[in-house]
Image (cartoon, rainbow, N blue to C red; front, side, top):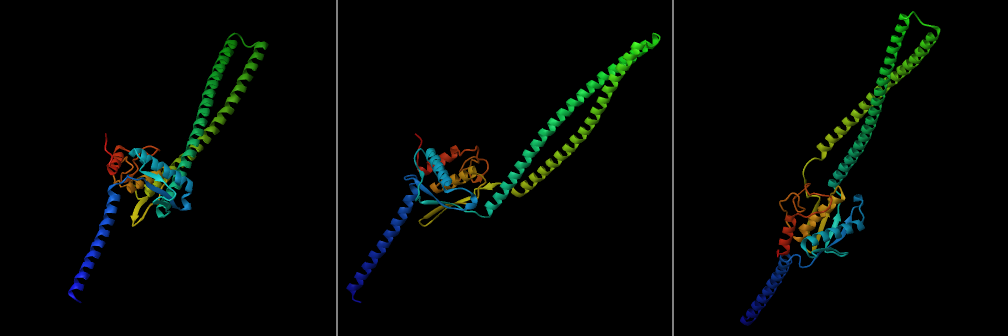
Length: 314
């Protein structure tokens, strides 16, 4: 190879190397720019694959994504997220073993709810039975005391008649009439006493059944606590970014509120927010202390969001 050609070849190598370096730097700068200027354009989300075992429609998922995007955007004071049919981040509901456990937990909760409703019904019925029994017992005692008073008065009247020389025919007829009334009342009271005794046994059997139901419920609660107790991390969902593909997978949720909370958490990661310390925050690493049935961001959530978006307080 001649010296002139050698110099030209080296020059070409330098040009190619410089071009490759420029491409590398440009690619890196592009990624860096995308990472250092979040919120400059809204992140877009779309509904991906939904396992039918979650029993949630695409329309409902679309509504959930719209609501969460609006909530984060309102917290930022600008549109930083939005739903789009061709959104860059796909949201999938992936049914796995964790959701199977959640479904079992929901079945336990439903059983507990049914048991509690049945026990509440039985307790109300027992309360009504007891009140009626107490009222009938009070009436029985009152009528028994009234009868005893009539018997005492009758005996006193008989003693007076005997002291006065005995009964006349008219007073003997009156005695027989009063005696018949007392006997009828006594027989009635005896019947009522028997009925109260039967009712007392029924109430006791009812109470035994109620206590058995309560024991069964307590056993079910013990089984539930042994099986499902523990602190929940935000492992129900993941946010992933590989090359040009970005997606959120949700694996587990027990309610719509939990689904919204998991999605809001992962969508927060998608915008660049890390975990915060407040247990009540959406972006806390543990689930369970977030308050209220509605999605609520704490001051720590909003501060972390505004820091990522470069929003300064006036």
